[in-house]
Image (tube, rainbow over all chains, first blue to last red; front, side, top):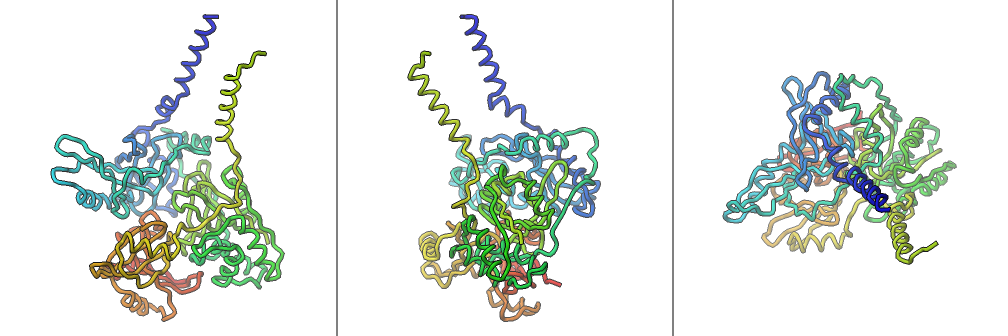
Length: 374
Length: 172
């Protein structure tokens, strides 16, 4: 009996160590060298000259970006071509999350130009005898950058000063919402890490598949994001066999009234399909529209892709998005390769260009598709 | 079988703990999408309390990116201020630091806009700038001049501080 107990305890200890969060976290940690390889491979994978001009581009030395726990959260790289900065890449340091949470074309790491201004803002907070040490960039989620300035009074370390890089605002620790690195699509992330961490040459992705429904209008926000976006989806059909439908503000007014959009521009999501079918019927057309379930388990990429493939734009609702909060946009296309999946949307924040959102990231976070079938 | 009450209790507690984390998704009945705004009355109250406005001239909407209410008013030091409010104060600036609405409209008229043109003083945080020219601008405040319908045919973003054209787009 004693023997059994010892064996049981032994197994318990080993399994506790192997599967403990600390052990798992260390296994999944990426150093700057490995991150540099991922960034370099990302350039090769994305080097579609006509899209981003990144053919034969190189990366800068890595810049460490930190979490609030003082651990390295990610690495930032400028993309260089002929000594010019032509973009940037951020690589996560934790393999539990997507390898490249964000990259940008055209200009360098978005926070670099704001560091000096952030330091000026931090200096204004100092009391007599206090001084600032070298700053650290805090990176909690895509497009969110904060600078942390350690503060010293002589040799004594005080609470640091945090400055929002975008507006120079002083932040407190309590201002930071907790961000979970846990991904809902770990298998896909694993595959992307494996591909981008290879030492062999990564080929440009010639197998990128992109499909966009041409002719969906761009509407600027009016009365609410849900009626505006549903308006874009419906207005497309006016030129495709449904000429009685109104367009623009007139259509959005009707949809907002039918959805019960409030004076602040908020709409209850479950009202959207009924409003769409009601307005279609009001103009003489018998349409169907329905909501899928909330979250990636119900509103899957495959279902979205299938709708677009068959020519139906999707009213795309997102909850807790790192960019938008709770927001609705018009889904007009998709783009995917072996490693990443984007949805292409018309957003009320940009009335001239398609926006690409990574389906597996916190940009989309919790999706809910509203299907519209004339 | 000897089932002690403490074992049963612990098992039940574990079941509840695990079960609560595995609630199925799919709720959509009361989910809302839209901006997180205070009512106009609460916005004015907040601007008076926190930004020390004595009088409020008007409240408008900023719909260029994240949606804000925009409060124009005068503070105790006789400074004309503009304040962007969501459910809290997002940003504020002295109105006299930039070009006036009239000057912005004058520039717009020179570029073909008429008197029916819509104009907003907008604050777009760097992370919300989706147009490359705006992203590359050091300013986050713009005069946004645009044709009035949701389907915009001509729009202009002017740097609030200098009146320079940051972005112009016209449907061909």
